[in-house]
Amino acid sequence: MLIQLIQQLKADLFLCASLGYDPAKWAFVLNPHKYATSPDQEKNLVDLGRTLFIVEQALNVDIMNNITSGLRSIELQSKIDTAVGRALRLGSRHLYGLAADVSDPHHSIFDAVCDETDVQTALGVWLKDKGSTPTWCHLQIVPPASGKLVFIP
Ligand SMILES: [Zn+2]
Image 1 (tube, rainbow, N blue to C red):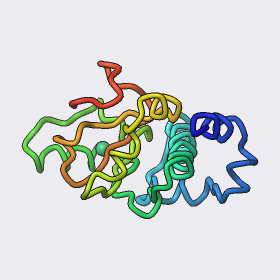
Image 2: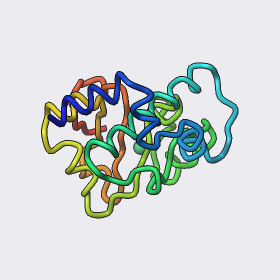
Image 3: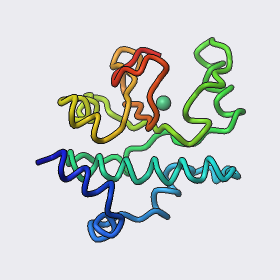
Image 4: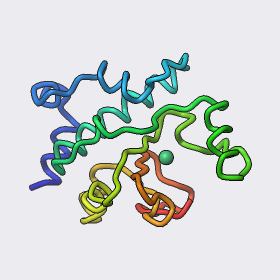
């Protein structure tokens, strides 16, 4: 039932629009710094916004209003990495517009997304494990190298 809904939402842009999907709003929340984007980043951000909208619809969670980090510049990624004492992560999916962080202090979004493997697979989102994201949920729309739905970065 849920998987059917997800597949319908993925296939039917008009259905998404009729439920309130607004690509411009997602573009704004996923790139609040208004970084200049390459065509690839632009496309990725559209895919990311659409996917996050489908997560909201399917699981009844609020992602749009809880996004804390979307697209990052290399400078911003460098600041974040330096702040936690690690080298610049050029592999960060945030640099490509393929990942978003959402405030999730009780892991309710995390738990909803990975509750059922089939649902998470249908959604096409991969999550960093809770241990490495204590107060937020990192969602990306490409698999990590391990291919695991929930992965340790
Ligand atoms: Zn992240």
